[in-house]
Length: 282
Image (cartoon, rainbow, N blue to C red; front, side, top):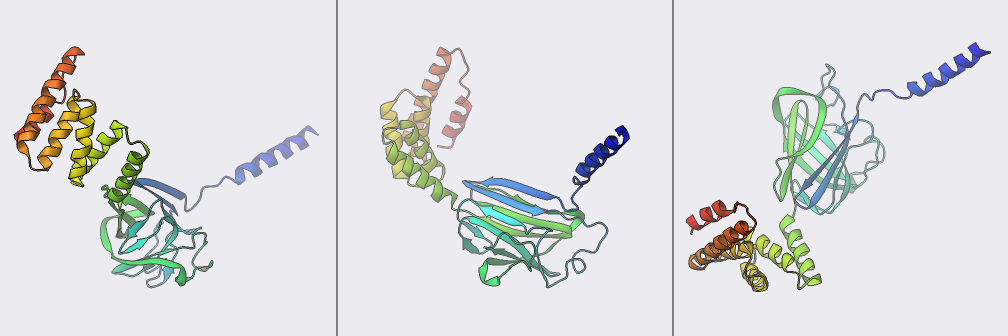
């Protein structure tokens, strides 16, 4: 009886372990923030395993699921420009037609397919973008997709496998979104001087609406004239507006206030070199 129970226990344990097997094409999830947009890639990563991939396992000219198992997807939390087309925020399946010299990357609104034959309809395509193939010096064993070359408003989707790679440009209206966020914050908190200062700095740094930047930082200084940072920001705004004399006067005041504040705290004024460098540009 004990032997029977032991055998049953072993069989149950073995059955449990047998369900935990390595996936030949493990799933990968990539999350990347670009500016104010969250991007997510969800795809499987098949491996070369000494096979001929392009023109072999993946025939030239044939529509390919771009991965394995469930279709790969790409999600955008805001509207985007993918390749040469504007697309709304959302989650899309991403597939490809591979040729020797270029790939056509396809985003489709049906995002729950298991292969091209599982309900794909070209009428649901959101964008098709043809990208030239780059031949890699070193082979990529497992299919790779990633978001690279980041700026505030742009990035590149990189797809690479075997010795082939393509790059698809992606762009976002980050500055426009940031302006809208700031304006909403100012409307909701009209007396919040921290928000006003943040808005003034944003406008100044991005060369946007400099008259509004001047108005806001003037209000901020009126509320707190002894802040070295407020005066330094005012100096930067005046420099951008073509008034170097006012900029230099404000920068000198910022330096004096910063040193005074640091001395009272028994600290060094760590921003004096930045202000000195700024003044040399005037």
